[in-house]
Image (cartoon, rainbow, N blue to C red; front, top):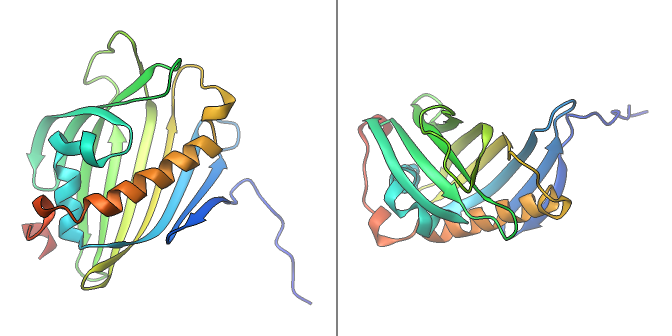
Length: 201
C-alpha cells in the first residue's frame, strides 16, 4: 500500500500552466512574505539571458510592469546593482527597490545561477513610492539544447504597505506568467544576440 504524504505548508500550489510556463505560489508560514515559483522552457541561451538581465536601461521594455530602472553600480561582469520602479494599478502606489544581481556559472553541471537580493538602505525612500522589502530571487538555468533553456525561478518578497486581496496570490501569479511571457519574447531581440561572457566559457 502506497503511503500518502500529508500536505504541508511547504507544498506549492499550481496557479497557472500555459505555453510551457508553470506558475506556483505558496504562503510562508508565520510570515507576510509571498513566494512564487516559475518553471518554464524558453528559447535562447544562457549568454542571451545574462545580456538581457544586465541591460538595465532597457528593463522598462523587457520586464513586465517595470516603470523605470537605472544602473546604480556595475561591480564586475558577474555583479551589478540597480534601482527599479514597478507600476501597480491605481489606487495602489508604485513599488521600488534596489537590487544586487549576481551571476554564477558552474562548469561541471553547466548550470547558471542568478541571484537578486534587495539592498534596502542604498537608495533613500522616494515620495509616492512604497519600498519592497525582503526581496530574494533565484534562477537556475540549464541549457537543454543549443537554443532552448530550462529555467526554475523562485522569488519571495514583502510588497510593503497595504495590498488589496485582488492584487495578492492569483494576481501576483498572473503577473509572474506575463513576466516570463514577455521575457521569452524579449530574449530574441537583436540586441541580445551574439553576446559572450568570460565567466560562461
